[in-house]
Image (cartoon, rainbow over all chains, first blue to last red; front, top):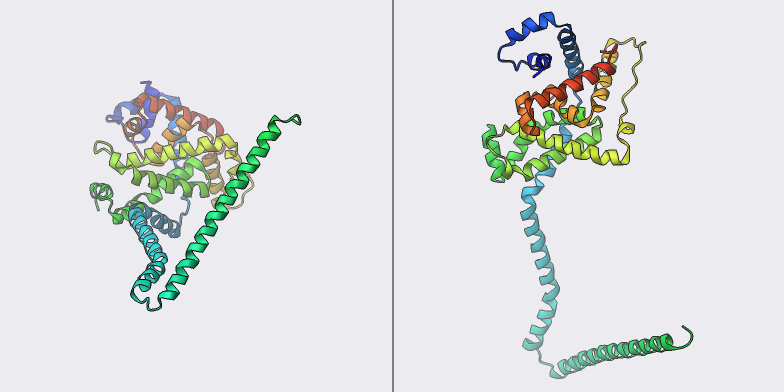
Length: 150
Length: 177
């Protein structure tokens, strides 16, 4: 280690035997200048501490509370999803149950069922129709590709 | 609360330990990063990032390391990552809004503040490796031995970087400080 580099250890009080370096310091003008500069520099650096408010600290604390609460949050979200889906399913189940329990009017139930079957078959028909038109369009495209236009 | 207790509590994911950790290190890390970066809002973000990294990586902390040194290492890495990103967009120096030094300042306090700003600006213009050694010693108060352990370099290298940093600062601040 260059002896002059020890000035930093000396300045920050890290030398085990500072007396030894003091002797060098007395005879070395470079180290004397360096020491004077370090003292001024240190003073200038310490002049002002930037204010960081308590609000920022609180904000941090709030933010950092999240990593450990993550699992709780996830649980909460899952619970909400389950609750919502339960609420969404409930009327359907209830109507099914009520259909079994309170089906005094069988004719009404039968007509309802018919209506539902009709709807389903309509959907099936529309799906079928859709598929049919899709195959038609595909065939047309295939024909166009093979035609002379291309 | 002792440091060991905080570390243990953090590893056990005790929420109260985070508050204690922030109370203990917020100010120090903020000042360190402020001098490293020189931009208030980005410093705030980086302090958050540092604490987040500390909490996430607390299980990686080893007892043989000094806890404060380990935190400063994380802060320094966060600052380096930030500056690399910033360098890409070439905006680092534009974001510095430090006033220029005027010799005709009637108020002594204001003059001192201007000197301080000049010093900070010069520090922020130092190369990254020199800046981190300089700030870790001057601002964070870590010993050269600790710095060398954190940065995985020899004490001589740390002293060399410090020397180059001080020399550059001396040239830049000649006649000001």
